[in-house]
Image (cartoon, helix red, strand yellow):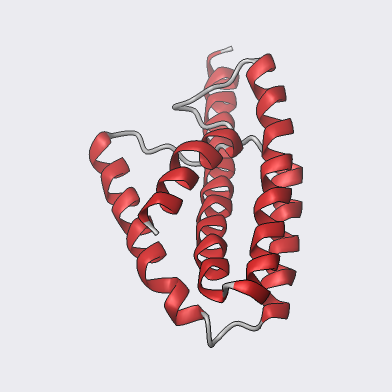
Amino acid sequence: MTLIYLVFSCCVAEKLGGYHASTRVRCLIITIVFYMAVLYLPELLVNKISRETVIVLCVIFFLVIWKIAPVEHPNKILDDHVRHTNRVWSRWLAVGIICLIIIFQYVKVEMAYILFVNMLEVVISMLIGKVVNMLYEKRNRTRFNKSG
């Protein structure tokens, strides 16, 4: 589980973007909370969420990723080349991971839910990052308009 979490945290989330904490302490706290979720949520969800629900949620995850990835954050701005490259990578990664989740639903259910929770965390981080970025841009526009 730890290896899967690290791959998601380091590789997948890097391409998809999302929320970036403003301090190392906040980053550590968020990392610990997300890691604990990966350790405990899959086991709880196995008997509570049906295959069909997981598949529907995966489709929603894919649509979110397709629409907003990569998500920039004020603490991590991307140049045009990196933004384009990450957009392409994010879409392919989403397809691959979602296919794995669906396949594992029929082969190794526990692994499907581990991947599902990781994907859920990435999508949540993307959505939070998108909101933070929008608020940051709005605040900067307001400051610019007041000074100009």
